[in-house]
Image (cartoon, rainbow, N blue to C red; front, side, top):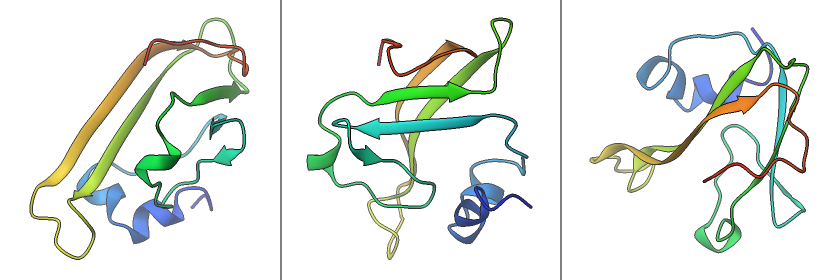
Length: 105
């Protein structure tokens, strides 16, 4: 099992929201040029006001990826009675995307 998906298993994202998967490329997502996004870490609304910067590493021009921003335990982990909430989704991200990619979020 990849260390990058362990927080998703602990948080029951894998199993309840997603099927088990093995990451095949590295993706780096940041907000405000310095706030890195990590699986399983909470992001506060004030930190995610602007759209994120996304860098996909290890793909090629023939690969397209999908980025999904979801909250698996709305309104909060202690009482997730609304369950999963989809904030946004971006499709067809080129596999050679670097930090200059300006996808439509």
